Length: 86
Image (cartoon, rainbow, N blue to C red; front, side, top):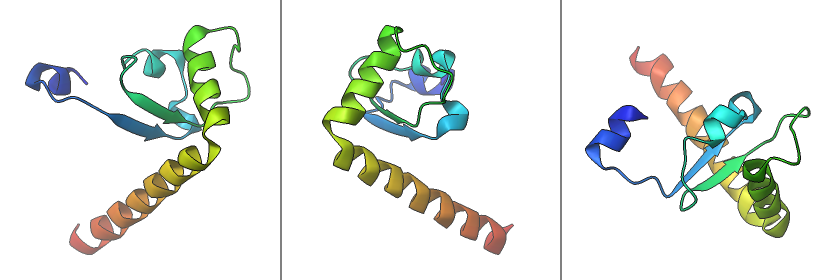
């Protein structure tokens, strides 16, 4: 993330699975970045960052699932390329 910030690259959106669903990870992105995250079961629902993510998920479930599906597809493609060219 430091490299991305130092180069000035702006992240418009990011999709993360529950293994990256931590408060530390959610604090890495500003309010302009659309964060699509699958929350863990033990989250604190009073935290403002989580409320923002949960609200976005409930307001736009189709968009969230579409982004998550795209992330899953990208991960599968990356895995295939890695096996092929490793």
